[in-house]
Every structure is written in C-alpha cells, then in structure tokens.
Amino acid sequence: MSLPATERTNLLGLPRPALETFVAQLGSRPFRARQLLNWIYKRGTGEFAAMTDLARDFRARLAAQAEVRPPEIVRVQHSADGTLKWLLRADAAQAFEMVFIPEPDRGTLCISSQVGCALDCSFCSTAQQGFNRNLTTAEIVGQVWLAMRELERGSQPAGRGAPAGDAAMPAERRVTNVVLMGMGEPLANFRNVVPALDILLDDYGCDLSRRRVTLSTSGLVPQIYKLAEVSNVALAVSLHAPDDALRNELVPINRKHPIAELLPACWHYLDEQNGRSVTFEYVMLDAVNDSPAQARALARLLKGHPAKVNLIPFNPFPGTRYTRSPAPVIQRFRDELLQRGVLATVRRTRGEDIDAACGQLAGRVIDRTTVRLGNKVIGVTVQP
Ligand code: SAH
Image (cartoon, rainbow, N blue to C red):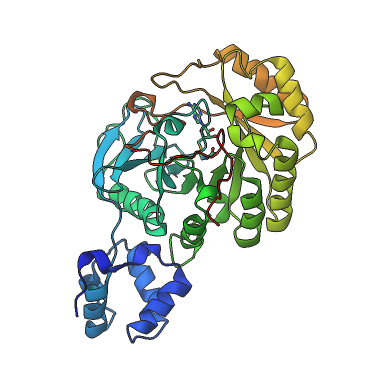
C-alpha cells in the first residue's frame, strides 16, 4: 500500500542502524541498508526506481513507504566572491538558510540547525528573528545532501565557469567541510543534531572526516559534556569576550554558564574525544571587545590550553548598534595573542553582498517563543 507523501519515512533522517531496522521492517535483509546508503549518498540519487541492484519488489515497497526528500529551495543567491546562499523552506511561512563558501583548497558548507534562534546574542542578526522551531535530522542532513547534489549539477559559484572576484583563484566546488554555524544553536537541538552528525561522518553516509565537521556553540555547558559522550566532531565555541561582565552582555547564556564553567567543559570534550584543539570564535566589535588589554586578558584565559582563536570581523545588519573594528585594531589584537603563544587567525569575510556572512543569516522566521534562552533564561529546558 502506498502511503501519502506526508507519512512516508524520509530516509535522510535515518542513521545507519535506524535504516537497517527500517529495511528489516520492509522485509528485506539489513545489509541492503548499505546499498541504499550508497545510492543516496555516494551516487546522490533519491529515486528508488534507479537503484537497479535492489530487488524490484523491495524498490516498490520503498517507493510506497519511504522518500529521500531534501528541503525545498526557495531562492539561490550568488555572491561576487563565489559564495552561494540558499533560502530553504521549513513550511509555508518559515524559511532557513545555508551557505557554500568555495576556497582554493576546500568547499565549506555552513548549515542551519534551527529556524531562528532563542539565544539572543546582541550582535547576531539571527537572534533578532526570534525562534520558531528545531530542524529535523532529515532537514539538517538534507541541507548537505542537497548542496552536494546542486553543486554537482552545476549550480556553480559565481555563475558557471566565470568566477567573479578572485578570477585567478581555482575554487573547490565540492562540499569538503561542513560547519554547523548557520541559523540556530545546534546544542539546543541535541536530539536531532547528534543523529545528523552520525550520518555526516558515516563511511556509508556523507563520509566526512571528524575534523571536517565542526559544531559551533554559544556555550551550552551541560550539552558540551553530553556531546563528549556521543560525538567526536570538531568543536567551536563562541566566546566573544574575555570576562563575564562583557560576555553576559554579548552572549546572555553566559549568565547561566559563565566562562569558568565553559572552559573546563571544552577541555573535557578534547580529552574525551582525543581532539586537537577547540576553536574560540571572537567577533570584533569596535570599542567593545577589541582593545589590547582585552586581547591580553583573552590570552591569559587560553594560554597553555589546546585553543585557537578565530577573530571574526563584525558583519553589520539593519538595526544593529555595533560597528566592525578597524582592520589595524584586529591585527593588533591578533598580534597580542600570538605574542603570548595563543594561536589566532582572522576570518576572511565572505558573501557580504548577499548577506551570507557570519551572523547575517536571517531566513524567514515567525517567532513563536514566549521565552528566549539567554537573557530570559529562567526555567527553560533545553531539549535533551
Ligand atoms: N549558535 C551557534 C552557531 C552559530 S555560529 C554559536 O553561537 O556558535 C555563527 C558564528 O558567527 C558565531 O560565532 C556567532 O557568534 C558569530 N556571529 C554572529 N553574529 C555575527 C555578526 N554579526 N558578525 C560576525 N559574526 C557573528
């Protein structure tokens, strides 16, 4: 019997063990799951009819009860620097964004984990949209699947074969790296994000190495400890300030989980997962957090630990009260860190002309929360 489209199981949401169970329920042998995964992720097809090494009646049962359905594309935007941004449908009214950033040696896909965000960071445009809902595992994996397929099909950065911007720069046009740095706080959607990470890393799935998948968090300390038990992807933490007084203002979740709790959670994650280092993101806000004294305070926090600092020039958006630190100030800040033995790099801003840079992803969100995490943290339970 054929199920209506809305009731079919979206296979993009099933990690291998769950897919094996599903396949067994359809009366086939569990190892068929691997063949199925091979078609979906290695060959990039979601058409069961095309999966010719699967028995005909199994294919028919799959077609009746399952589907491979990525999020629907609402709009694609091309930046002059080759960056691509997709607006993806969450439902009739809501949408979220993903961004592909081609570089000479890698292609980074920045994906979303939620429609909007409840964390209320004062310098982030997504925060202004409010929070609507968590993305499902299928919607998270579906972004990667979709981007891989779209890039393959020639939805090329900067208009096929004629890269604007760095014309001489050969750009990687495949997804080699995935960062959970789009809309949302991934650790506030732990239940759906962790199975998605499993699929991204599975040899039979997207087959990405653990060092090429990065989860970025604003610092949900209990969830960092939980993540250490179940995943080993690279960890990035949005620090943005060297002391609690300032961090409380910029990243309000700090009032609940201050720096002295956050950093030990990061070191624990590395110990448990045998990781190399944690990347600390630090947005450069003019005359707010960018003084040499603040750089020295940051160096004192991180010195001697396996940490890297990634300085992100602030990306403005309508209505913000912040401005970007001047380039020489950012260089000076970096040098203060380097002189004290703390590794630091400055993130190159990409996709600014299409609002695809860090903190500019706004999607289309209708806020339906009454309580936000962060500023109004009282009594909020983060989904386990
Ligand atoms: N919620 C997660 C994932 C988002 S990652 C987190 O906070 O880590 C996006 C990164 O861009 C974070 O480090 C975020 O703090 C930073 N960011 C947000 N708004 C920004 C802006 N306007 N300019 C530059 N970076 C910004």
